[in-house]
Length: 234
Image (cartoon, rainbow, N blue to C red; front, side):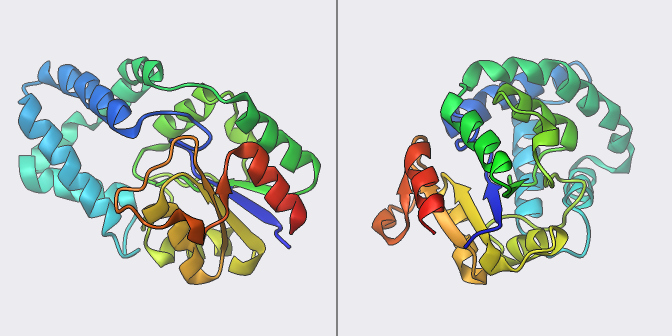
């Protein structure tokens, strides 16, 4: 039934507690940018505002452009000269955030097994990070960027989950009809919204995110073993 398997990253292929990871990552970022005169509290608030701008993006520009437009609106255009400091952060300091993540051998095995079976495997992670950070997190998960035929990052797409445009754009880029795709993720609100465009879904429950306490019985769900059984039954 399915030709393409779309995987979320954080909490799906890369085990983590989302809040612990985010808080730790922001702590490292604030410490880095304090060296360049940024107030930590204001900086974190500004990063959140830029993140919300990416989540609301309508595709008229890349998420990267939406983020930095918001950032410059807060700090002024001259602040864009500090962009290289952020690149250096993701190359170096950000790597410490690996401590907040685990490795799931069953996730690694599932990706490789699906590849051997001829499925197209896509990393449909929320595109709110630059490629350099996303590729690091892929490797933390025990995988390689080359394992995926498409990886969504803030540079290459202009919308985010749960916007239906995100899912239709991913399907378009991989040359598949939405009905040929299965979205696998741990976030009920973001990942399961793929059903709105006709994609199949599977909810990974190992690091479940269900902030609205939705009824998860509405979706096929379970661990990676259950996911593989579901795919093979279709």
